Structure formats: C-alpha cells, structure tokens
Length: 291
Image (cartoon, rainbow, N blue to C red; front, side):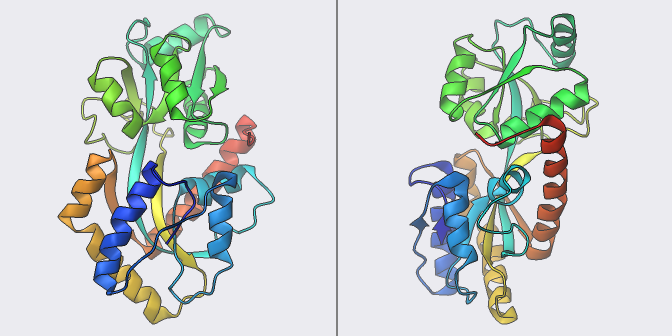
C-alpha cells in the first residue's frame, strides 16, 4: 500500500490502521510504503505505472485526484484513466476560523467587515492549491467579498499565526481545529461539509447559513492501477467494505478526528469526476496556482 506522505502524519496513520485490518481480511500482510514528495505525485505515479494485479495499491486523498490535476498540467498520471477506485474510506471537513478577540461572531460579521474595509482582511490556508485554499476562494465567491489569501507551509504555522493574532481568518481541517476550538483559542464560524461535523456539532454548515455552493471536504480513498481483473477488484472492494464497518476502525479514525465513510468504487469514481470538474472551474475563476 503506497502512501504518498511521510511517516507519522494523519494520512500515514489512516493508511496503517486500514492496511492492517485489510490485510487480516485478505489473509495477506500489507506493507505500507511511504513515497512522499511532489504534492503526492511521486507515490501516485509509482502506483499508476504498477502492474494491475491487486498487489500494489494507493491510499491517498482528494489532493491527488481532484486538486493537483486542477492546477497542474504536467502530472505523471491521469486522475481518471490511471486509477480505478476500490472505495472511499474517510472524510474530513474544513472549517472557517477566527480569533476569539476578533469582532467576527458569524459569517454576517465577516461579510460586513470585508465589504466595509476590503483591504484589511486576509485569510490563511495551509498551502497554495490545497483544499483550504480552494474552499476559501469558493466561500469568498459565494459571499460576494474579497480577502487576500495568505498561504502557509502547513496547518501548524497557519494556526499559530491565527492564535497569535497575526491573521484574522483561517480555513483549516476539522481535525486540526478540534483541540484549539475546545481550548477556546479559536472561534469556528462555519463548516464546509454537507452536514454538521460530529466532532464540532454546534458549528453550522455554510449550507445552513445560506451558501450551499460552499461544500468541500478532504477525503481519503483506496485506489489501484486501472485494469484490475474483475474478480480481484471485487475481492478487494468486499474486504474494504468489511474493514470500514469494523467498530475498531471507526473508533481509531474518530480518535484522529476523521470520519470513517465508506463509498463503493462506482460512487467514488463519480465523486472524483464531479469534484474534478468543480475544482478546475474554481481554479480557473480564482486563478489558483501551485506554490
């Protein structure tokens, strides 16, 4: 199981938990192979070129299949033609945050403040071309305001500056926000998922607040090189479905601030195609470019 992230991060932890349980279901030990770099393209390219026999899989995220392809024209893989989904395994919402000292209690306050002084406000993301950047631009478009985008090299420095008052607004994952919200260090304004997060149940969605187009999350999926024998694909999908129904897996992912969410291969493929179209349109409209 190729993981296009370095060891120790959230994506790696998810893959190791699911990989261990998947191996038990298949009666075949699964080795996690970390191939980080190039915004997940190194690991994805390796799997795209592998023999489609079911022995090389990719556990990656929406960054690989819908975000990078929306802003990078020279990827060493095709997000649709190079892979076939085995299934979706996780979803993590994004949340709009501000500092409690800011006079921004809700989205109405943000809109009013940004319109009154358009040069004053900026928002942070954990990197140019990331899900936080995309959803920030989607939110600005929906709310009819403009704020300066400040890309950071990761979630931690962006959160540090938000807490320290160096930047007024940030978009980050629910996973990263949970401890800071509970500690009262940041104020959540709205969630970008279709329904409220079980981890932050008191935070309304953008849809509830009148902005249904602001809908995006970071998801994880298990993929294989395109061309698997049908019986191999069916065996892998059946095993993955059973793994994702395992209470221990659900609990393990929840402890990481991640929602265990299984979608079968056909629905996952439809999600990739639908989101890729939306992200390309968003990137073109907002002129989103890679770092």
